[in-house]
Length: 626
Image (cartoon, rainbow, N blue to C red; front, side, top):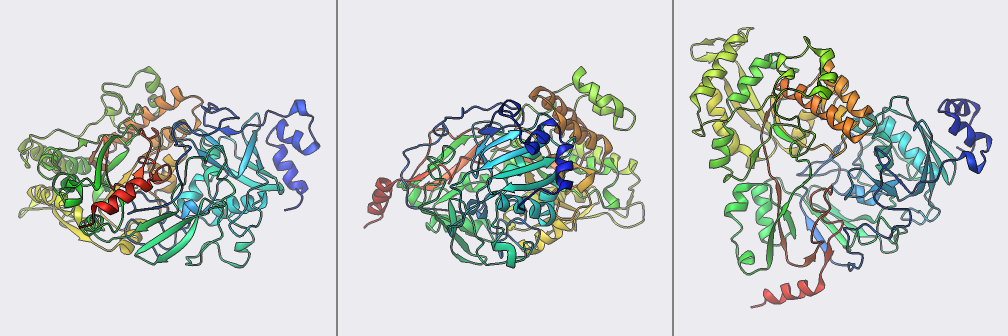
């Protein structure tokens, strides 16, 4: 829009004296300092005149190809397939890597918990009440067709995502009131009072789309038309369900900005898609793709003995993982009546013998997960809550299990036999107390039906982990089975919460905030496509999420997360799995990378801060000659 209407002036004016000063033409003394970045608590590692992030190789050469299979996903993406280039809505299966084609307002520094620095926006002014953020756009920012990227594009993008984006985006933008373009160079984003601490950071990280491009296209429909981007890469060749390539934009307008130096070094980044993990591994041995992070202990322990490894043409590395490892487990759909009683859910936890599974199936490679904040200082400590946590929990005494005020729940340790009789007897007792008797060898639900559980899976490599668990459930009289479906059906059934139990893995950032709602809040328990697979709908947990989002310091944040952890564990919403304190990497030896990845990077920073090594690639070619 060209001008702010009177209604908009009044709304912004409500944000405080600072926004009013903008609108009347403030003097320099009234305006706060222009900031080159922002963070949750106002602390930034890098000064305004920084040259590059410490963890990159600023002299990294450009060139070569980096190819991989998906290992992380967001919004509507799948690990196994894609059928759309629109990766920020609910419909379809979005292509991995589409985020590389768009420039956000700001980008994260991966050696800070949450520091962000200007990309499409060169700076930001924040009102005294922290409800109004005024971004100044970079005049050199442009889309891949050469058209200028302006505040109008940014405002259009934020408004469209808030109205028509993936449900998880909509939830996390709930506290964004508006995004308005004052002119080409100025974007004003207004937030609601009581907004979550990290919502401005999230908003600043979202992709900026071309307003002109979508003038004749539906924003919220699947499409294989290549959208107009402004990021370091653009879509190149692709074949639906098989692969997609991204080509480096060699005259990218932001290539020499401080947050970008030493990054985005490959000429081509290519994602390969496989429906089966074993087939995907064979693809790596045949050099169909070049980089693999190994998530299956069995394969790491037994199958990396092919000739290219023995000859040194494939490198293997184990890199420590200092990031919060988060949560993985079988999440129990508490929306279904048969899982409503927490005693039933605890019996399901008792029936899983992690120690036997880890030793027999996973080569002892893992440790047990107990908390959604695993491997971080946000986990609740052993013993009863200290005074600062007790202060947050006390208002809910009598409404939550008494154990919340004692030691936090930890899954039991079995004898490693595969069928720990003491734990199975305990599970039998819990089920009987919950009103689920045994009749003719079958566990019966209170409504007279046989207790059956279906585990929903989308790829076969995880089936061996289910077998022993299903055997133990049978000992309890529970009929359990695995339903293996294709990736598309799996996605639809998860989004519709059409499952009994299913596997999920996620991790919170080092500074959790509004994203907590997407996984744990009553607000999204019935929202199609949300990550709250267990259907957690607990007023005490909702209140603790609000405390997490409202924390004014990292100390307050830690206390609130630990209190939340006690409440979540007490709910028995999942059967916790395991985690690995390292990254297991294998790659064809034609890359260079920083000696130590930044602590908060997604994985080890590949491909963003890795580079192609021409000398290694030449030696690799020579080595395969007869």
